[in-house]
Image (cartoon, rainbow, N blue to C red; front, side, top):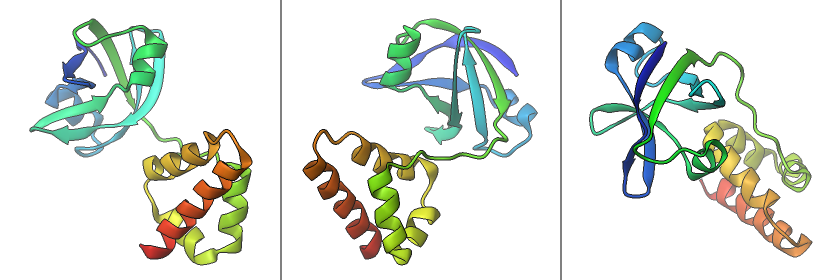
Length: 146
């Protein structure tokens, strides 16, 4: 489904408002996983959310930087249902810690992909081994207490 709009911005939040007719035409419910192609040149995967009675797709600062787009810019959007499995690349240290703790591993697997990704990026972004280990321990602790 293709449509034209402006990149919506409210404060620091930027996103794509999706017309209700597009959501209906996708036929996968109110919050479908989608592949988003903007201006025929920038592609990413996301999920439609409902915010303030509008269907929205987030357009993060990372996407703005990579695409060169800003809030208010006119855009052409092409949406297709995302039927590919969502996976998160696991840092080795986190994967090893989860293998040692099956309870935490089961809880990790039950998390949404966005929460899994947040944990993985936290560990991956550590600059020192000490920080990486501290972050792994924090993830495991949080999973044990849920």
